[in-house]
Length: 459
Ligand SMILES: C[S@@+](CC[C@H](N)C(=O)[O-])C[C@H]1O[C@@H](n2cnc3c(N)ncnc32)[C@H](O)[C@@H]1O
Image (cartoon, rainbow, N blue to C red):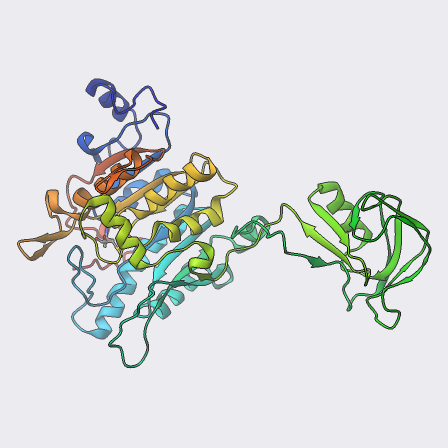
């Protein structure tokens, strides 16, 4: 997509002028060589460096503005992955305490930058799930817990495991205000055509309801019908029709005045009919009134797997390898997983701001661009990730050109936007990439601590 004055063919001067006008000039250096400037496209801001320092630099301009945060922090598995360190503390106790302190400092800022109707998703596994839940209860409030999603992460499981083949991980979800989120709801899928809701409701007291003409479809034969009990008279779900009614061309063409145990009051019914998004049916036989809500949606399933279009680690690794041409990042999340979660919150927020401050391979940026392309919109995102990696077999905090951010995140995002995958050209996605760096790593981050306590950084 080249819909901008500054397409990929823009001159260096034009690009430089555009980049100069962007926010946060004083906070980060821009790396023009790895930017992809499309002026009118939603922006992916990729920030290279320690996320606590970056978050603190961004916080004043982001307070209360972020619609969705998705993060996939180190799980504290004790492993030194080939691109990043996942080990905290010298022994088990210190390790958990250090991990919690590391997360506390970052999640405190996350809470502050979330919008009032914002939502945070945090990927985690059994190593720290319990401690993360308690930490989030404390920071976001127990009452704002939404769900602990279970993600089907692999089809294989570790064949050698003797106690349990672990095929799932979690995505913990909290709202800034669950009350507010409840009004808007989370989107999972469109209602299936086969989702029929009974209008009859046995526990309710019988009441008289009047359906206006031509609001109920039916498979009953055309003709005039007399008042009386319809359905099995011994069943409390039968209904008493009070006035003669007529069926014409598959519709009840007159008013239907009916007395029975119904789910809604007349007031609810009138409001729903006014909204125009409900359809009523009566099937031949039992005279049961059924309704379909056409613009309602199903909330997301708490089980994230292929039934809701969510892939596994295997699929994610294959995709990343196809993009980059090599196996470069261990355990990337599938784009489909992040897309499902972001769509759940932002389906009706086309200008949403998404934040991921453990961006890793850049999957969240890719997912946001895909979502904009699939359902339209101008969702932008801020990604933060460090540039750690291995040089000559040794782990280093900043691995330069070979670090995660330079060699994987920025490259993956550019490929997602241009479609120039290692495996061949595919359709590019809408989006503009701005790659920034924290020029100096601050050696003393205590100035960024929320309250002066607990601030411990990963070694
Ligand atoms: C579990 S990975 C995220 C994977 C990502 N969701 C994906 O699917 O590609 C965590 C990432 O956060 C980065 N990271 C860890 N600590 C960090 C810190 N303090 N600041 C910035 N990035 C950090 C690691 O280098 C790693 O790339």
